[in-house]
Image (cartoon, rainbow, N blue to C red; front, side):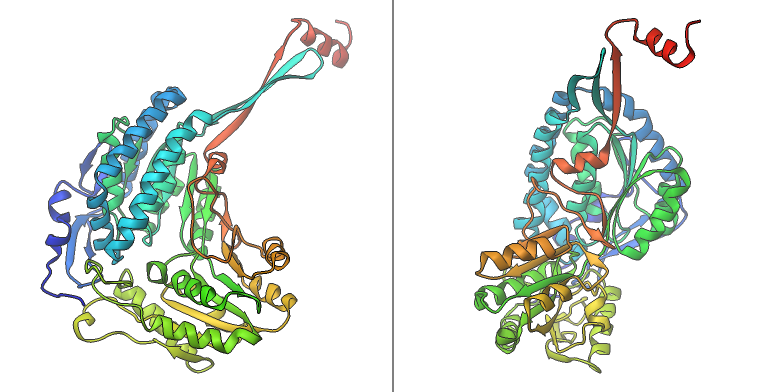
Length: 511
């Protein structure tokens, strides 16, 4: 259970680590110049973690200038040199693993066992992957595609990348934004969410320690309205990468179009969890609980809509509710905790409001309440199962972003596929069946960037992550992410030294 006497500084000494400021520009920590401050709060206790000066437009300008100054040298480094630097970076991240795990748990409320076993190892693995991938960033080989000419394609970095990351996975999102960009030779300015800046700053510091040049990675900790919009609109930023809600993503796209920037958007999700009547019921139940409650449900790929074929529906609801009731909610730093708080009281109240409104049209089978007792000061919410909602209801169609799973029945396979696709989103999905033909049909017909079969949530560095429809476009992770952070150039040689004259003669005649 939560121990209110466990003071925040014992968890991670953020106030000491960031006494010099929470902006990281040109290789050093500085204070923001907006004239306003923000306080990072431990969502498990409500205690203050760090009060810092927010970034303003001047800080964004300084960070972009540092990234622009560093670009020629970093882009001019060989792939081997960038690869060596990223290997050193991965090693530093691994050495600092416990610090990163504790800081991430503190600012987000994630159970420490989750950050130790998932967030931090995944980040180290990303760094190791892109260290190797940096050496395989190639154009196309030369070829005589047009008579006496030889053509080839160069793949080149874009320039300064302005990235905006969300609060649900601050460390991993910093890695997903930064690593492919710098592996390809770009420099970057990252704006983390102002409520969770700690591990992004630590990530940039680790890069400097690994020998990545000053200015290649910069972090500005400020609000989206002030620092974020200024970064997106900045004329010296060649590309914007944003992860967050679809509504904010539309605003980012609107601002970015004024300077015709390259744009990468990873937006909201409402992942369907499709259970056919031949599925392994117990496996599906465990998958649904794990897939819906990962990171307290604050995951855009989390299982949020379980569609269960009618012969299994009631048993699925009963077993899922029973398993949810065994999930241990508590202090993220306690060894036995399965589920920590949401990231803030604001987010907790938003989730609770969704469930409270759903009571008028659906059945709340379990959960749907704020714990009391030792947990009353934190942003906790019990795992919640909602059944029998209509397909067009708010709780089915809207992204709740909390520990809430909605379960609906379906009859035919055609109906299940239709319902799975019946939201604006298309980031991830899963299908559960012992029938290879049913499973293969689901992979074809479900419109989502990732479809798991008999599992939900695992990701790996070698494979791409990104959405369809209102979930955005572009890919994180894998070699496919290099498509986002590079541009291609066609180079053509005249092999005869007379082709230009022949072309002139064809167009203009003999002169």
